[in-house]
Image (cartoon, rainbow over all chains, first blue to last red):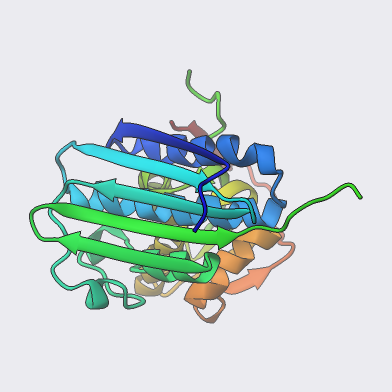
Length: 147
Length: 127
């Protein structure tokens, strides 16, 4: 794909308070393309799921760094990469199954990936045990034009 | 900065009906406290009906689904019932992914039993 027309990157510790920060950072950054309310809600929800996964699963009860980068391309495709240097996922296919969760006792529904998949156009997960996980989310938002 | 961003749950209990009005964003961070407040109110009031009012919810991810599923389990154990009320359009979409409509009745409006002398109103703001 071509070079992005705009991009940003933030790094923050895996504190649950920062789930909200990540959503606000993404919606603030994307305001220049003026996405529709629904599209922005979809993106915020997917980001919230991915960041929560880093906090709850990647780092368990420890605090590590989460990196989130957002790129916007000319055709209004938004690509977001959220990564951690946590424990990694043993079996990605299993982790992505709806309702699969390793933490049912904490009222985790096991729907994080299902939400990301249904609210975004594309999702890619790469993970290495003991090294970390990266989730790339992509969505093309409607181009608004005043003409 | 408590209450600045309007996170929390406002609980009204009448007879054995507990209504929890959720406010602000529901994510993994805020759901923890909300769950705790609701469960205490259900137990303290020996609730047979729990109404979760979503009208003031501004955002919800799958943590909100976990919250609903957990409260369904709790009410089921108590042989009570769970009602989901006033879900904004966007939140209904998140709920549909999980098929929560099969676990609880989803209503637009609800009515609490009439006020009584022993009415307990507890307002909690969490952040």
